[in-house]
Image (cartoon, rainbow, N blue to C red):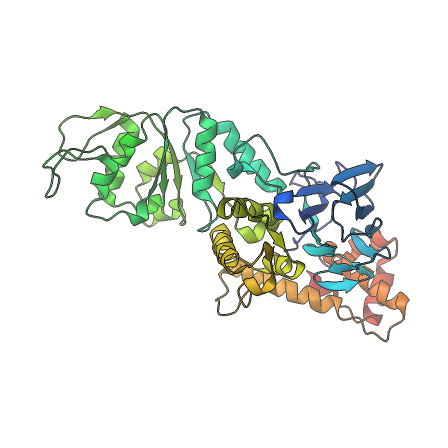
Length: 474
């Protein structure tokens, strides 16, 4: 979704900090699918000037001054295929006479302005254009030494992952937020892997524990403590001794279980149900909740003293729709786990579906969709026919944010298609340039005038003549 910025950063490296925000923003280009093969990896690149796309024997990114050259190991890409040419605060996509053509959001183009979130198809490869966005350093690969759960190409998410790496070796509690299916348990396992703790990670879904057995299962019980307790057993907390205890949906714990957990954390010991003595326990706690814990405290559902005890580093995991930059390599990781003997290839129409879908159930839904597709495929090629009938058919739109994103997308499309075909090429080009500048500057006419080197009155005159309403961009 395009971000509402008062001003757009220049595309010069190191420039582009917004007032009061202190972070560089500008244009980034992501190679999200190389030659249709998710296993081939993904990469990101700053756009400080023009970018050229072409074919090479292997993937490589080269820079000469502000010019970026991306060589894709894709037989369907021409040696000189397409270029992203600076235009105002953004870029224009230009086909360089390629054999197989260049696509923008699934439609073949010879030249067109790019918008934030644009999907560029060259041969069997798919690229994602982001502008304005938080800038990150160039990365030719998503690979890293850290656990798979802490890999990303999204600069803002990298910053969160860096905080997790810093606290991983401590005993500090980590609180993970975010929608269902965003990978909280995978993240907890990554934290545990970096912690160096000798014990194991024990994952507990608090919402799935029966109320009648929750204390017994968490804290253990003595023989005869209740009907059916034929032998003494350690609980899940004791099983995490020396390791990490991951409590998913901690907000679902009963009031009584919350009291017992608070005592465990305070005294660093656990008392089985029916026991008179306690055993010492050494554990590191990672918790997750769909619902806001501070809000649950205000509602009297969650104990304030327990929240104060577990409140540590809080990290919100973004929904998949906010990290489309990672979708290609995530698909590759899921495919390796689901079908390690197969080399998954994704047809362009299927790739466009995957990147356009809202994924309301996030990575879990992506995994489920892939599992069904693998069962339907006769070969290793994922085609559109192997995917659900519609990206949104039969679904309720979930949340105000997604509705806002869709409205903005529809409005953007309406703006871009507003130029009558009967206009002269120069008027069509001017219309596109004004729309791009107005989107970049949130309808701020003064900023647009500064960018285009014209007086504000001239910009107003052009807008009136071309039927552009600047207030629609605010």
